[in-house]
Image (tube, rainbow, N blue to C red; front, side, top):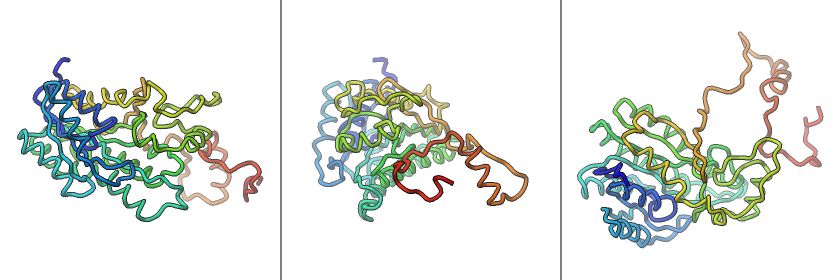
Amino acid sequence: MANLLEGKVIAMTGAGRGIGRECALLAASEGARIIVNDPGVNPDGSGTDNGPAAQVVEEIKKMGGEAVANFADVSTMEGGESVIRSALDSYGRLDGLINLAAILRDRMVFNLTEQEWDDVIRVDLKGHFTTIKPAAVLMRQQRYGRIVNYSSVSGLQGNSGQANYGAAKAGVAGLTRVAARDLGRYGVTVNCIAPGAATRLTATVPQSARELRASRGIAGGGAPAPAAGAAPAPVQAPEADPMRGPDMVAPMTVYLLLDEAWNINGRIFQVAGGHVGLLQDMYPPFKNIYKHGKWSLDELRQLVPAQLMNGVQNPAPPPADLQIPGRDS
């Protein structure tokens, strides 16, 4: 290795397993000292286990690197601040932060409970803010820093049964763009990865849900969708695909920590298998209609379907045999 992160201190949440573990090992192999945060919860957020974080620390030390475990729950401000404090207490500095902590509580929106909504938002969205806030204070003062957040295709495109998770991950994308604007002037970059990899979280998705998403043109786990009109590829469990290993996502994540990535800021990258894609901004709109004045309902009834929505598909259309008012008008 070229020791591209020699002397840097990187804090990572959710780094005890999966993509987080791979990022920690890769960054450590490039000379970084790592704060490995992971409370060791189950995919639904229940339970705790210090083992995963401690094991990653041990792996890094066996490689000849340096690492410290942190077991805090980043869904609280105290927990997020603890991660950043671990970096300062252990190594006296913080150069980078990767936010990977996430849980799932999948359920169709009409069955989703308030508790399931709150739990996922608290970990998957607030858990980014709780570390970004203290890290931003420090990085602004030192005029340097790298932050990499984790969104999802569920937040950027939408997956059935993931209203809570999708909302959280869409929020992460928005948080990334805003934080990048807040911190860019201070030499701090904030970017985001939307990964496609086989992890403990993706393993909890039922095969029936994968097939439903594929039938609606939604590529599972961040993989690029097939071209329009192309036959869908056979649906297989992601863990069966060697190109879907979590190690495939780590290099782009670690690249964004490098000094040479200084001018990449506020961007969202889709990383799945061998694909690394730069996603378009959500604004400005890619299609629009304009009138110098107020639209009438009759004008919109004519121009919205004819121009604005022409060629735009419904991601989840109702079946042909369902009577839909307005369908045949």
